[in-house]
Amino acid sequence: MKIALVHDWLTGMRGGEKALEVVCERFPDAELFTLVHIPGSVSPVIERRRIHTSFIQHLPFVEQRYRWYLPLFPAAVEQFDLERFDVVLSTSHCCVKSVVRAARGRHICYCLTPMRYAWDQFDAYFGPQRLGRAGSRVMRGAMARLARWDRETAGRVDRYVAISQYVAGRIGRYYNREATVVYPPVDTKFFSPDGASPEPYALVVSALVPYKRIDVAIDACARAGLPLKVVGAGPEREALARRATGDTQFLGRLSDTEVRDLYRRAAVVLLPGEEDFGIVPLEAQACGRPVVALARGGALETVIAGQTGVLVDDLSPEAFADAIADASARRFDAGVIRRHAERFGRERFGDEIEALVREDPSSANGGRAAAPAAEAESLRSRPRHADAPPSSGGGAPVPAAEAESLRSRPRHADAPPSSGGGAPREE
Image (cartoon, rainbow, N blue to C red):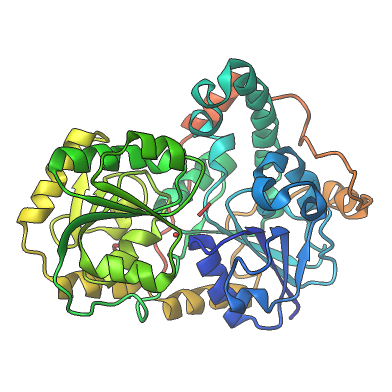
């Protein structure tokens, strides 16, 4: 069985890349396709792969500004030549779920999330407060076209696999497709307790991007009188530093070993943003440390209130400060916290993904609504060259009313969690 792995971009080791790493270990002969690859940015397991990149790789300033080329991504993914592969396994949070597979092939998409900026988080990325009114207006039209293309190419996937029940709901809402749930892998062998006593600081490990809401963590720790350490980098770094007090340290990117040491000694680890899943809370719990998280999204599947942390209903500094005080006053059992995290290990993830790849395709189709044969044949025969225009998926932008209708569509994905998970780093 010839297998192609497809990933949006390889520019760092975050949660999606950690899942890809396990997939690469399970399928050592598979070839890897990606829009952009910055050599040395991902683990040796991934770097050793035969990596095919798109024409985006050769555009100016791509290593620092690859996101500038977002409107070109649809054209780039449709030009990947996957004709010789029996199975395409994509790990997607942007565009690669829309690659064109061979007519005889099968496409399984491990969906990290439908792209946030084209659907329900446009303002966080491209709102007037970030780009100005004129810039935001231009991007709204571009993202509407991208959302239309994203929806209309949903049928190119034979089976959707979601990282959480929360993401399965998003897949149902935006793509009208069902999804199996396989929770992402956590390296519970590496992330482990060492018996260290907690020290008086809170910890955030995150990309510094708008939806992560690091601003709330900064303000909450100032109110609670608890020093804050922030690990990570991103476009919000300068704005957050201006907001922070003297008790906030920005540590930038650190090695996994350095992050593990910080987990082990943190009084509490904070997750103020609404996450699709959230690897950080489980890495912290694998080290025996409690988490204070917003009670939305994936945290509802990874944090057990009162046992492994505290869930916060209100996204405000005041509520998070109260929760930090609550967590600090509790006597959490590090063993209980650790055992909960162990249910999300790498071996479990690898077993479940491999079973899906090797299953009889006639046994389940993941709620597939097939793309018309004529469309697939047209796309396969389209010339593959670097100056091809981006696909618009139908041209006109999605009208505001239609977009709102799509966002409010009932969720159809009520598939139970996969057997590897119970209750239960991106972009």
